[in-house]
Amino acid sequence: RLTELGGYMAVDTGQPGLAQRYYIQALRLAQAAGDRAYGGYVLAASMSHLAAQLGNPREIAQLARAAQEGARGQVTPRAQAMFHAAEARGHALLGDARTCQVVMGRAVAALEQAEPETGDDPEWIAHFDHGYLADELAHCHRDLGQAAEAARRAKEALAALPETRARRRGIGLVLLASAQVQQREVERACHTGTRAMELLGTVRSSRGAEYLDDLQQRLAPYGQEPAVREFGERLELQAA
Image 1 (cartoon, rainbow, N blue to C red):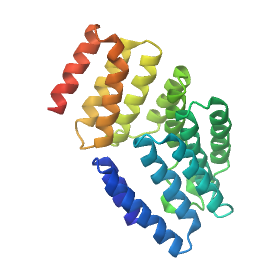
Image 2: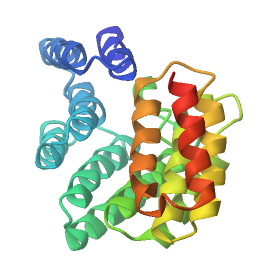
Image 3: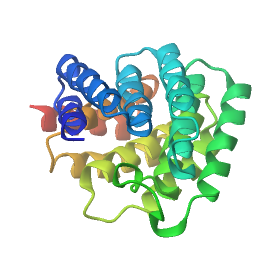
């Protein structure tokens, strides 16, 4: 578990190569211990998210399916929900809306079967609640261009996050702002993005900075609008 957490920290500090080495080692340790469930988690939660960051969408779905196959019969419904959500992210990035919709449905159904208050879940999956799933689904809808659903799921995810989770709330706000851009609500997107920027300015997070850069690219076609120019100036100032 500590090895996998080391990989997570490496991702958040902009060291994907180091993260990959940590994740491979965590997977080997899980295999050596005969813990197929945790090995599946490393594949679906850690390695697939790294593949997304590195721009390898086909690999995301492959890793998530490998997790499902390898841990079949060994995991709780909560873990199954996370595995399905990871696979859905891959299909969304590939633009396969039909398959993504089916797999998202499986994720929702699995989480509905999970025991309340984590029940018999191992500690490594206890965090995966309805808010976390909503965040995963918001990414899927955004990547498929389904702006209204992306915004709805992003708001649902934010509502489940405590104010103390600055990094996750900041990224969630960027996700909402991206959906607002897709809906051509540019001024509102800039306002939401500014709130995200303020939160992410309180933490060191390479991943958060990447989300803000992505939002700026989405706003680029509206670069002549005052709100967009102001957002860009503030982002440049914060990055300096």
